[in-house]
Image (cartoon, rainbow, N blue to C red; front, side, top):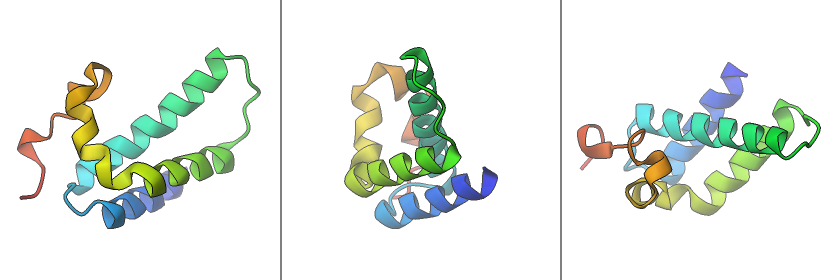
Length: 89
């Protein structure tokens, strides 16, 4: 799974070069865990890491260039993604 997270982090950095490596990894891990926990709470069977990887890849493709602006508007993620100390200018 570590390889999948690293691959997705690289993809996010390509889509959003304003992010630091650490911030991109946090986003990938949050998207991954949020999807898996939401699916489990909804009672869906676990579909595997490949399925989750594909979903996170789709999210990065669609929204990766906008993720850095999302955190400040969503209190669920704002405290985890305060970018004041690591966003590239």
